Length: 134
Image 1 (tube, rainbow, N blue to C red):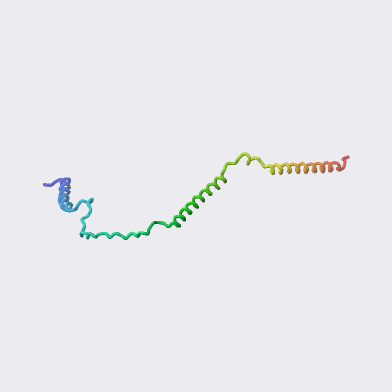
Image 2: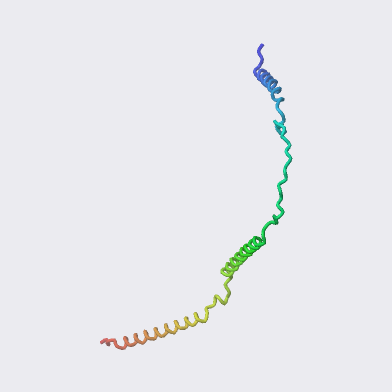
Protein backbone atom coordinates (compact mmCIF):
# COMPACT_ATOMS: atom_id res chain seq x y z
CA UNK A 1 0.00 0.00 0.00
CA UNK A 2 1.36 3.31 -0.99
CA UNK A 3 0.60 6.51 0.77
CA UNK A 4 0.04 9.73 -1.08
CA UNK A 5 2.89 12.19 -1.11
CA UNK A 6 1.12 14.81 1.00
CA UNK A 7 0.66 12.29 3.83
CA UNK A 8 4.35 11.33 3.64
CA UNK A 9 5.34 14.99 3.77
CA UNK A 10 3.10 15.53 6.82
CA UNK A 11 4.62 12.52 8.62
CA UNK A 12 8.17 13.73 7.87
CA UNK A 13 7.36 17.18 9.28
CA UNK A 14 5.85 15.68 12.46
CA UNK A 15 8.87 13.41 12.97
CA UNK A 16 11.24 16.37 12.58
CA UNK A 17 9.28 18.42 15.12
CA UNK A 18 9.19 15.49 17.56
CA UNK A 19 12.99 15.27 17.48
CA UNK A 20 13.50 19.06 17.75
CA UNK A 21 11.15 19.69 20.72
CA UNK A 22 13.27 18.02 23.46
CA UNK A 23 16.41 19.80 22.25
CA UNK A 24 14.66 23.18 22.27
CA UNK A 25 13.22 22.69 25.75
CA UNK A 26 16.75 22.61 27.20
CA UNK A 27 17.27 26.26 26.26
CA UNK A 28 16.32 29.00 28.68
CA UNK A 29 14.19 32.03 28.00
CA UNK A 30 16.20 34.46 25.81
CA UNK A 31 14.89 37.45 27.77
CA UNK A 32 16.25 36.36 31.13
CA UNK A 33 19.78 37.39 32.07
CA UNK A 34 22.39 34.64 32.05
CA UNK A 35 23.32 33.06 35.35
CA UNK A 36 26.60 34.34 36.82
CA UNK A 37 29.46 31.93 36.38
CA UNK A 38 31.32 32.85 39.56
CA UNK A 39 29.86 34.49 42.61
CA UNK A 40 31.35 37.97 42.91
CA UNK A 41 33.23 38.83 46.05
CA UNK A 42 31.60 41.58 47.99
CA UNK A 43 34.09 44.39 48.33
CA UNK A 44 33.28 47.22 50.62
CA UNK A 45 33.81 50.49 48.80
CA UNK A 46 36.29 52.79 50.43
CA UNK A 47 35.06 56.38 50.38
CA UNK A 48 37.45 58.76 48.67
CA UNK A 49 38.85 61.43 50.93
CA UNK A 50 37.15 64.76 50.32
CA UNK A 51 39.52 67.70 50.57
CA UNK A 52 38.23 70.39 52.88
CA UNK A 53 39.62 73.36 50.90
CA UNK A 54 37.84 72.66 47.57
CA UNK A 55 35.39 75.55 47.24
CA UNK A 56 35.03 75.53 43.42
CA UNK A 57 36.39 78.36 41.32
CA UNK A 58 38.63 81.05 42.68
CA UNK A 59 37.38 84.65 42.68
CA UNK A 60 39.69 85.72 39.86
CA UNK A 61 38.48 82.76 37.75
CA UNK A 62 34.86 83.77 38.28
CA UNK A 63 35.72 87.36 37.33
CA UNK A 64 37.39 86.18 34.11
CA UNK A 65 34.36 84.09 33.19
CA UNK A 66 31.97 87.00 33.77
CA UNK A 67 34.19 89.41 31.83
CA UNK A 68 34.41 86.95 28.94
CA UNK A 69 30.62 86.59 28.90
CA UNK A 70 30.17 90.36 28.98
CA UNK A 71 32.65 90.81 26.10
CA UNK A 72 30.82 88.17 24.07
CA UNK A 73 27.44 89.83 24.62
CA UNK A 74 28.88 93.27 23.80
CA UNK A 75 30.37 91.94 20.55
CA UNK A 76 27.05 90.43 19.52
CA UNK A 77 25.26 93.71 20.31
CA UNK A 78 27.74 95.73 18.23
CA UNK A 79 27.35 93.36 15.29
CA UNK A 80 23.56 93.65 15.44
CA UNK A 81 23.60 97.46 15.64
CA UNK A 82 26.08 97.83 12.76
CA UNK A 83 24.07 95.49 10.57
CA UNK A 84 20.80 97.25 11.43
CA UNK A 85 22.23 100.67 10.55
CA UNK A 86 23.59 99.39 7.27
CA UNK A 87 20.26 97.87 6.24
CA UNK A 88 17.94 100.60 7.51
CA UNK A 89 15.23 101.86 5.14
CA UNK A 90 16.02 104.89 3.00
CA UNK A 91 14.14 108.07 3.98
CA UNK A 92 12.71 110.67 1.61
CA UNK A 93 15.34 113.19 2.68
CA UNK A 94 18.07 110.84 1.54
CA UNK A 95 16.34 110.39 -1.82
CA UNK A 96 16.17 114.14 -2.48
CA UNK A 97 19.30 115.68 -3.97
CA UNK A 98 21.38 117.62 -1.50
CA UNK A 99 22.07 121.35 -1.73
CA UNK A 100 25.55 120.70 -3.12
CA UNK A 101 24.15 118.40 -5.78
CA UNK A 102 21.53 121.01 -6.70
CA UNK A 103 24.27 123.63 -6.94
CA UNK A 104 26.25 121.36 -9.24
CA UNK A 105 23.22 120.85 -11.45
CA UNK A 106 22.59 124.59 -11.73
CA UNK A 107 26.28 125.16 -12.51
CA UNK A 108 26.16 122.53 -15.26
CA UNK A 109 23.02 124.08 -16.77
CA UNK A 110 24.65 127.53 -16.78
CA UNK A 111 27.79 126.16 -18.45
CA UNK A 112 25.63 124.40 -21.01
CA UNK A 113 23.70 127.61 -21.83
CA UNK A 114 26.98 129.54 -22.14
CA UNK A 115 28.45 126.92 -24.49
CA UNK A 116 25.30 126.86 -26.63
CA UNK A 117 25.36 130.68 -26.81
CA UNK A 118 28.97 130.66 -28.05
CA UNK A 119 28.11 128.02 -30.64
CA UNK A 120 25.18 130.10 -31.82
CA UNK A 121 27.30 133.26 -32.26
CA UNK A 122 30.00 131.28 -34.12
CA UNK A 123 27.38 129.78 -36.44
CA UNK A 124 25.94 133.24 -37.15
CA UNK A 125 29.44 134.60 -37.91
CA UNK A 126 30.11 131.77 -40.35
CA UNK A 127 26.77 132.32 -42.02
CA UNK A 128 27.48 136.05 -42.35
CA UNK A 129 30.88 135.48 -43.99
CA UNK A 130 29.64 133.05 -46.65
CA UNK A 131 30.20 134.08 -50.22
CA UNK A 132 27.07 135.33 -51.94
CA UNK A 133 25.59 133.26 -54.73
CA UNK A 134 25.13 134.83 -58.03
